[in-house]
Image 1: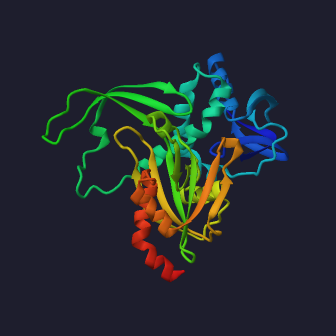
Image 2: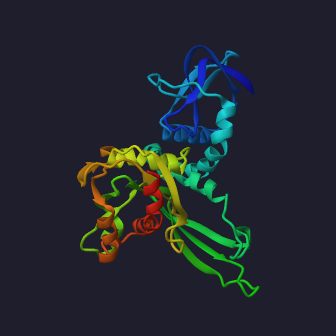
Image 3: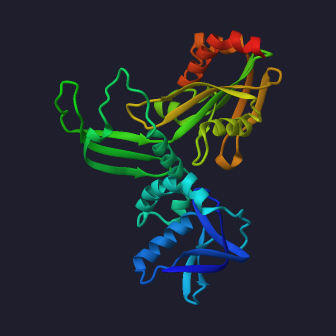
Length: 341
């Protein structure tokens, strides 16, 4: 039933994809009151609210009725937001994220949901971005809707997900494949940027411990890489690239040049890369430290000459795809970038 919540406004929550009611004197928040809510529905609401870092509090509505409302903590200092702006920017993304978030109800605590929420939102944003699609001038135009999925399970639901599918799909011969079982690692989109100083002809690499090489049995699981990070919900890949350069290396980029957008391991993972070259000013060659302590990042930076960077291709020390691709692209575009600097 339509009702109002006095002395409250609509603001941007700590998780910006979702708006939240917060105390604001002399303001009025329009909404609806849901009556006859079941105990299970209320528990689900509390679970979701706490997963967003919000609270369910007793309030009195404009009609005089007692109610429970999801609100920000009293100490929260939120900026007012417009509901129509939220619907335009985040409405579809919020609904997409809710499908995964509420799938955890009954299996994890609200704290466990809060811990997973950044990845839930990034996965939802990645699924939305995937809908844009790419050209099919050479490859098959067969739609994903023609894949018949008999079963989908999620055997692992930690910070990352793995999913198991039983499916069959249209074949190139006009028939249908046998029913097959497939597994996929469900990741997010990532922005990756190789910082380059065209005036002094230097690049910056980051070095950090990586679980992939360690899990493979590599005796030296510290990797040289470009700057990289997860594309958060509500961010563009370009914004992520700039943010990560500040967080990992203390760098402000002048410009970004797109190198490629691509799947990294399409046979086993949903992860999608947005790879850039970042034009910037770099200090003299040497080492530095970077990364966020809040994310347990232990990063060493290397500022090296272009020639030293290219030698890593020859020795094999550059052995991750984004770095190899970025250096090859730089070798092709270097003269143009230097002449324009």
